[in-house]
Amino acid sequence: MIEVRFFATLREGRGKVAQLSAEEVSCGGDILRRFSIQQEEVAILLINGFHSKPEDPIKDGDIVALFPPVGGG
Amino acid sequence: MPLSENQKQRYARQLCMPEIDITGQEKLLSSKVLIIGAGGLGSPAALYLAAAGVGTIGLADGDKVDLSNLQRQILHSTEKLGVKKVDSAAEQLESLNPDVHVIPYPRVLTEENISDLIADYDFVLECTDSFEAKYLINDACVRAKKPFCHGAVIRFFGQMLTYVPEAGPCYRCAFRHAPDEEKAPDAKKLGVIGAVPGVIGCLQALEAIKYLTGTGELLVGRFLSFDGRTMDFEIIELPRDPDCPACGKT
Ligand SMILES: [Zn+2]
Image 1 (tube, chains in turn orange, cyan):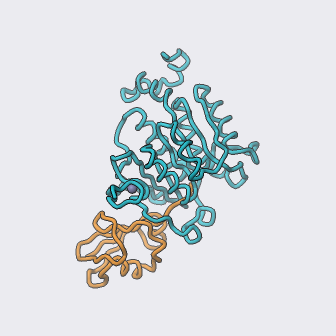
Image 2 (cartoon, chains in turn cyan, purple):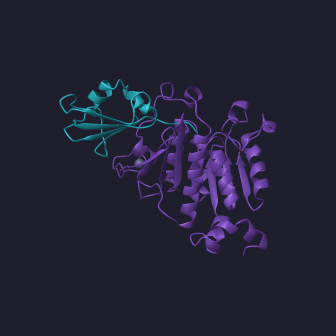
Image 3 (tube, rainbow over the protein chains, first blue to last red):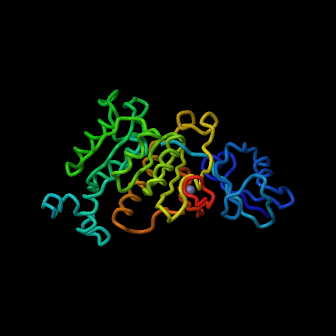
């Protein structure tokens, strides 16, 4: 399984956490597509706590965290 | 200068704490904190720093008080509509605590003026509402080796990260690229509940007080994400980026 953790506005309509089977996705970009998230909606993509790019591979057991840009004050 | 009897009463609730005591209070009174943005985050941050007796508070904001601000910007009030935010704030803060010297900067920060502005201060609170300003402040603070605390909010959500030179990631380590301002979520369009910048602004004031008095653990390398709908406060460890264009080695 792959665990996807959403933060801030990315939680709206998606909840806090989702689980995917490793067969469903092979990279960060697949996860964004799977949840209808545009690339510009993601400010930080962490795979197992490390900064990653949408093209970086994902494997079984990985934890992916997605943060949107938040700029209000 | 020893604390007066009046000051001993005013600060009694924190003087009795071992983390503050007389030494910590004297540190606060001789400290200088710059708050950039006198809006939703800057309002509670400034009020709590003034109340705690931070001796010098610089406030930078180029805007005037607008009716749509008052839902969250609790430094200002209806009779201050149209007044420069920094002037409205200075009056409010000095009436809250005459120990505090407020220095207003009624201007927009630019690449040209920011370095001079931050130079005099011990700690900076980044309370702005634009990505452009957030990157400008980050890069200037990194260059000047100036610690600062970033805050941002939208709708029911808030976030924070504290930067201390050489100790952890900067804002650009966490958020490498500025988003397209057109496409990025905008609190003007998406909204914000006033109490949310209230929470985050208070926590920014707390980070400043902790830094100035050497108390506790700062949000250095620890990104705080707040969800006001569920009351989740989550801390995510964020590494420093060795290739960061602002603070990286290369
Ligand atoms: Zn950096």
